Length: 322
Length: 164
Image 1 (cartoon, rainbow over the protein chains, first blue to last red):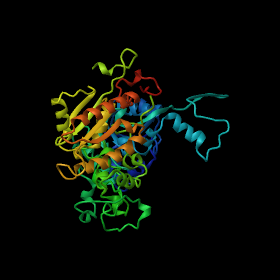
Image 2 (tube, one colour; image 1 turned 90 degrees about the vertical axis):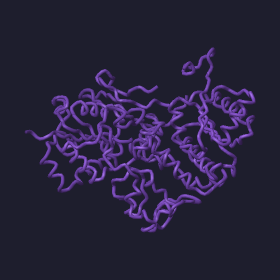
Image 3 (cartoon, chains in turn red, green; image 1 turned 135 degrees about the vertical axis):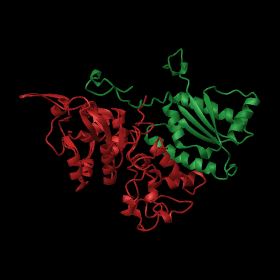
Image 4 (cartoon, rainbow over the protein chains, first blue to last red; image 1 turned 60 degrees about the horizontal axis):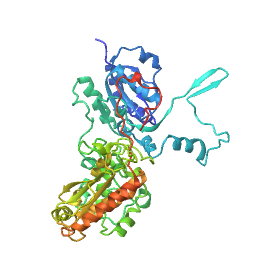
């Protein structure tokens, strides 16, 4: 019997998710023994035409990382969807939009203007902008079109499973691959990670106080972080209580607060709003001026609470003026 | 519903307001306004919570997503919360939510928090009328629809799925 065929593809992402696959280390040999990798542009020389030549559903599973923000990414996501039995949204960007999703605070024109005109490091006197089609002596060359907004993978194609994280923890990747190979998958639409908050596996858990009452929040560079004590109790915005576990509390173990890359548990619809709710209520102020003063220590609420999930939020993007 | 239609000179914009009132004070005040036969703008849909502290900011965003143009939150006066501290938590969440909504391009006048005790029926009337006027002046919220996967992708143009 031939081995199941597997593909990997990347869209708007940094490449860290590809690293996560390589981080399987020796385990990747077991994976390669069990499956045929038939598409992986970052590591192996397959072309789009190879995928187009496949029968529909020929790949057993395709892992797609990255958000969707260009016409090319959309086309490839749709192609991989057609050719795969299962599609797994791999990593924060595919799952909830990720860091590229913060572009939804702007629109296409704002993004292009910043990149090609107004950023202090840009020198572009001719005002060159990327065009979807340009005539050159050799013929016409094309580029993908940038979308107005960044979308998650599930907002563009049907997704079977979600592997969260920036990048997904190796343990979860291996568990997902094993579950697929053994056919022991949870119901479609599941997130392949424990459905409990990160604090549950945090080594600092015991020092988490019963009740928090903070005068203000601190950022990591403003405080000498005690490596044993709960980060919330030190006034740091650690998003552990709002975030799914599965990473082994990697960041708190490295003496840094959790930034929420594994996204919400299944009970939460809008990660940022829920996180905002929890942190606001830990403040000790009882009157508006005192509360507003405390909140000055959160200078960028969207970037803090929706760092990985703006396109997956209920608002989806910044509201445009009428 | 007819108020989904685009505003025209003959069919002016009528905002939809979702109000979250706490059981012990503001909801009772709204009840008093009703039994006292006070009239106020009919644009408000009132939802009763046990406490303003129960107001998850997700509810406000969900109201906007489902078509609300404004949100009113009503709770007990400071010191009067039936559960001691719920309204203080609501106040803290309200301020952080407003800060976040500003970044998301939503005018702070669309969300209002008011302390209204059980005996202040007139205040319910006044606050609702004021908020409806304010939101009317701002116009419809106009959120971008959340994209959904298109099956039969070939029919779609190669470029952007055009947003409303």
